[in-house]
Length: 466
Image (cartoon, rainbow, N blue to C red; front, side, top):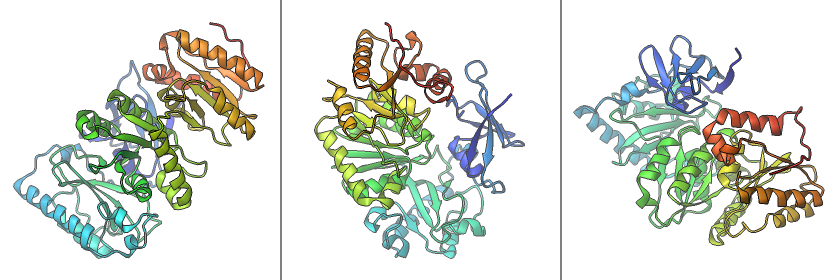
């Protein structure tokens, strides 16, 4: 039996990404396929994970690592499930005070000179620079008793001088992310440690000023802060890994009063993992009837910080463009890059994200809000630049009377324009692509790959009858 392969930087990243819980001889984890917390990894074979839901999933994966000899530093649920002792509570308070002091009062050439394109005013509430290995050692000594191991004498860990604390609702630190400006080639680039063993430590960042109109949700805090570098008034939320969207979504749904009159700019990475997270986050936002846009990157950039570092002025223009889209009630989602071979035309943004969560190279076209009236105009505008002549359109409308009528109109128009197209075929009872994706993701993924991306299934005009 062949198995899919997953690549991680090292074992620590894998355990963190899959929300591993220590169960003695094995870890119980989130299944990469069905995303239920019912997959297991035996400690004597850290290269294999299997979902325990045999009847509905049962998927198996080979786990591979770029760093094969890394020591396991991941803090598991065994530590988190314990209550805080009086000593630990006092130590956590002192550790939080230390971190706040370093953030707000210590000099840092790295941060003063603009770390990853971010000014000191942007990074000040979020990044502490302990400057050198001796400073990091002091930090670890301060946290001794909160961490699962003594890292103070670990040279590899003490090179990670940049500390990004993640605060809980009570103002105390739950988790820290460690990076390095001392050794920029150190791998992995980021390590996470849980420092509050009393609860399920928060695994996302949130900083939303009361006056903020727009909240940016990024895949990493540096990505979200890149938007604040462009507009200091935005609120920021950020994951600590593309698969760690559940607690953020729960936080949004459980605290609707915090998000009244707010609008969201969903800015996950431009890759499959990013679009999978976007699909879940957008579904959550639609559940609470929030106003949102999906941010679009140029072909040369994959995330917010990458965009800021490479093309800051262009990044600023892109942000202004989405700001205007909010103000004009434009809710379309059109992302067609020069390298795109297939453009999926959908009825909803969730439909579009379901395709991109299978293959991120899909171009998408969704018209919503005031733009809903006519899909012809944007196609004609793009035709002026000859950007669509070498592309194939995939019509993926809902299985409804209105959806079938819209499909027939599009076929007439595309044939008139002499453009290649195909109607995406999926079960009638699925009703829509997003419904198909949610009900049977494995079959949906197979359908997308077979109909759109396999060479033996070349696109062609087909007869459409409903």
